[in-house]
Length: 293
Image (cartoon, rainbow, N blue to C red; front, top):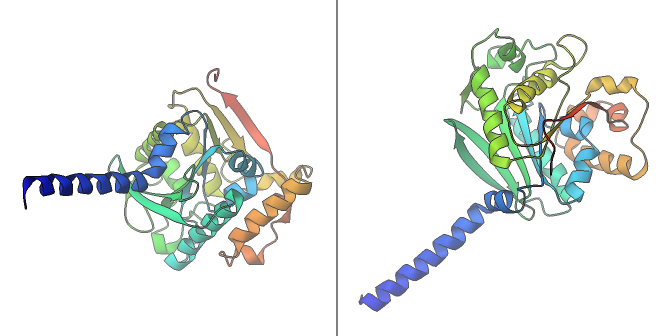
């Protein structure tokens, strides 16, 4: 091969490598360029918590074109095997696709953050939308954990009853501090101007799920170390049933559709009445650390 042909082949190869990398890292590029002042991070325990407690704010943010990155702390396995929690992940992907009004095609990326493997799924036709699955074990309602994961729970991790916790796929081990650090690093990567999470005002044992509180506590601890100007919002969980209904008309219809598109993938959700939570959304805490320009 002469030098001209060799140079031409190298140029073609470089061209295709650039195209491949642009496609592969499209979610990253969109995040850095389009989402620099427009990102919301939701951090919740289970795959339906955002649909029940952070919505219809969630729907409004997606529909308005904001960059929405949702982190699911646990696998939501409820003591079941991988078939159940992977199906729940498929369900939340379907729901976000519906809310985004696009095709249900996701681009999977596995990144290493502070020696921990993190799974990120970017919606192909709307990479402003990302789902991040940490896959820690469901802690059971009272934080006791389940037998198949050695009774580990993020509530126990927060309360220093255990020193570490394994993900359900055995990909990563977290300590209390490393979990806080991971959340902080993801905040730094995505640079959100708003962080939405669950109830960090309430306390373990007062009638809500232990994973809800633990997730919110970990989030709040990381958020306090995140220095970029931002707002943090804490949403009430199961306790909202004591408050008046405040989700009506089109918002209620959209929230129901988003939830039931997910529920088709969750056999436990299909056999419970979620109407009281679908008809309500309440913020329990809202605070800005600095003036946001």
